[in-house]
Image (cartoon, rainbow, N blue to C red):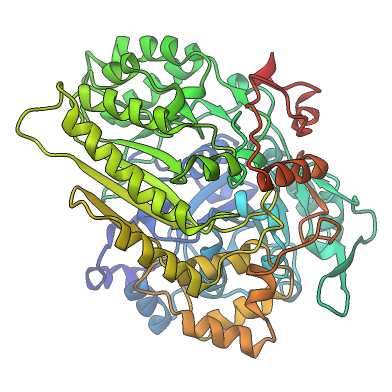
Amino acid sequence: MDKRLEKQLLKVQKPASYTGGEPGSVVKEKETVDIRFAFCFPDKYEIGMSHLGMKILYSLINARADAWCERVFAPQDDMEQLMRAGGFPLFGLESGEPIRDFDVIGFTLMYELCYTNVLNMLDLAGLPVRSKDRKNLSPLVVAGGPCVCNAEPMADFFDLCMLGDGEEVMNELLDLYKAYKAKNASKAEFLEAASHIKGIYVPSLYDVSYNEDHTIRAVTPLKSAPARVEKRNVADLDHIFFPDNFVVPYTEVVFDRATHEIFRGCIRGCRFCQAGFIYRPIREKSPEVISEQSRALCEATGYDELSLCSLSSSDYTHIKELLEQLLSWTEPQQINIALPSLRIDNFDKELLDRLSAVRKSGLTFAAEAGTQRLRDVINKNITEEDILSTSREAFSGGRTAVKMYFMLGLPTETDDDVKGIAELAQKIVNEYYRNPDKPKGKGVQVSVSASNFVPKPFTPFQWEPQDTYEEFIRKQDYLRACITTRKAALSCHTPKVSALEGVFARGDRHIGDAIEYAWRHGCTFDSWEDHFDYDKWLDAFAATGIDPAFYANRRRSYDEILPWDHLNYGIDKKFLIREAEKAKHAETTPHCRIQCAGCGANKLNGGHCDARR
């Protein structure tokens, strides 16, 4: 870091977010490496440092003798003002040197509302924000993460995107970059060669034409680029890279604990859940490997909490065997095991008791809808009795707090479904007070969190319209009026934020102009309420000729070309249409371990799914 900037760090709110030097961070001699990689998380330090994917790829790149990966986070307002006032460019935490001099600048896109931060970080680095204006091979600006499943709103800003799992494709990309850098190749030559790596999407090698009604007419590959880009899929998690150490922050972060991924994918097929489809097929890591790697991680970092990460942790085939192995060494060391993403319909009291061995905490369940009809529409495949019986077991085990997640605006939703959320919360409260084993002298608190449904690519609801801002407000007010007990507390997500997310999620390349306009007029950190300014976004859409309702609130036909149709995440479009039609009739689909629904993802894993082995 520039010594002049370092002397001013006491003027910012969280100086430890910019100093680096934390235990576990990697510092190399830059003269000894061929590739310098800036791993950029386009949000605050305390958010990015909680992200498992960043930890994995940071360690993977630094495990190479020829590469050095440094971390970069979005500076908060006070730090950005100091940097711009003093002319200090964005820098890597490990070296303190400007990332504009690095070889590769990589962004992970975890959620759509970080897009303006990407542009702001490139500008702080002293680089043009658009790919066409960065003429040289270095620095190459790349992106990965779930949002690149529809990269089109950001297509003009990235040189390439990495679709799917990153562990294998990252090394192949760096090997190719090293070879082309050594022969002083042009950026265009490198990008065409990179487009032949499975999982690499180069937006500039695809021409998008439009119909008069602004729908897409065709997406045409240029030069030798493939017609469809298939996501990268890691088949064997037991033998894929996993770090034995994490960077341990000096300052508080959102999730400051050891985290281990126990499997990828999901067997459930909830029709609203993008992650449940784009991370298919399901692949499990063995209990022995999880336990061994987790123990090494806890010993290296000193963490006293281990979180087992997945989309549906209780669906892990060997969950009881895994807990036995983990508890054999976590209990003596007083290390708590956190098991998020539990399913209500396969959660048992024995599991609850084992998780309480070190530390008792509240429980969180995702019911998603308040009535059985709507839960069938979204293919949640849980019943009201599943919810109530699980609550009874939780209360018998000493729990006094339950958090329930719901969504407003789901397809086919009526006011009766909205009212059903309040009625279900009341039934859970009643279960507590009629339970003879409830803790004495303690009341119950049911937290009801209502988010707003956003249709996402590669889901059966990708063709559905999103509720308007006004309709979200009406439903929130109605739900608030339906909750009459003081034992249930309601929190609702901001509809304007969800409205913007709906535009980005299903946007095309035209949205890029609006994103740049909004950023140039002061929009950053759009996922944070203290920064979000919806009026500025409306101005940006008006100035660039964008109708937000065209992207967010319009029902699409099955034969319309969607902005992401040239990207292949392994999910057969015919399967998604079948699921969309079943949703209209509230018909459910059994999960993968009961019956194969023919989604097509098994083709990515050598013709089979681990869920059906």
